[in-house]
Image (cartoon, rainbow, N blue to C red):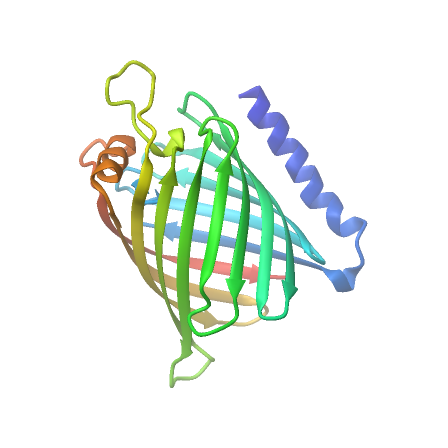
Amino acid sequence: MKKKQLLTALFLAILIALPTYAKAADTGADASVDILSNYVWRGIKLSDDKGVVEPSLAITNGPFSASYWTNYDLKTDEANETDLTISYARESGDFSYEAGYIYYAIDGASNDTQELYLSVTYATLLSPTVALYYDFDAGDGAFLVASASHSMPLPVGNSIDLEFGASISVNIDNDVMSIDTNGDGNTDAFTGFYNGEVSASLSIPLKNGISISPTIAYTTALSNDAEDAIEGLGVSSTDKKSSILYAGVGTSFSF
C-alpha cells in the first residue's frame, strides 16, 4: 500500500508540475468521468454488477503525456485499481506511433504489475491499429491487440458522431491473463487467442470543451484457454462469464 501511495503522490506531482514548465501553446489537459455497468478489462469482468465510476486526468505537452486513471467500485465503495501512464506519440506519413509505460496498482491482487507498450496506427479506412503490451513484472509475458474503428457524422445538429470499434487479442505467455487451475500459486500461462470485442458509441459535444459519450460493448472469449482464464479471473460473486455485455456514459472535459 505504501508503494502505491508513493507512486500516486509522485505521479500527481508530475501532472501538476508539467504545465508549469511547459509552454502554454504546447500543453493541454483532459479529464473524464465514465459511469459503466461493469469494469471489463481485456474481456475480464472486474466488478460485481453494481456499476463503476472511472475518473481520469491527462496532461499533454507536445509528444509527451502523463495520465492518472482510477476505477471506483460502487458495490464495495472503494477505488480498487489505479493506473498511471506515461507515453510518447509521433506521426510519420500515414502512420502514427505511441510508446509508453503503465503501472497497474491493484487492491486485492497479490502483486501490482507494470507494462511497456507500443502501438502503430495506419491512417486509412477503419484506422487499423496494432498494439503490443509487454508485462515485465507480475505477468512476465505479452499481450497483443489488433483493432479497427470507424466514425461517421449523424444527420443531426451539434456535430454528433457515431463510432464503431472492434478488436481481437492474443495472450503471449502472460501470467496476469492466465489462471491458477491447480490452486498451487502457479498460473498456467498460455499463448493463444484471448478476447474479441465490438462497441458502438456516440460523441455528443456540448459547450466549453465538454462532451458526453454513451457507449455499449460486447466482449467474448476466443479460445477454450481464454474462456477458462477469463471466467476464473472475474471477481463477480454472482456470475463469472466469458461473454459480457456492458454499457455506460462518459463525460469528458478539455481545457
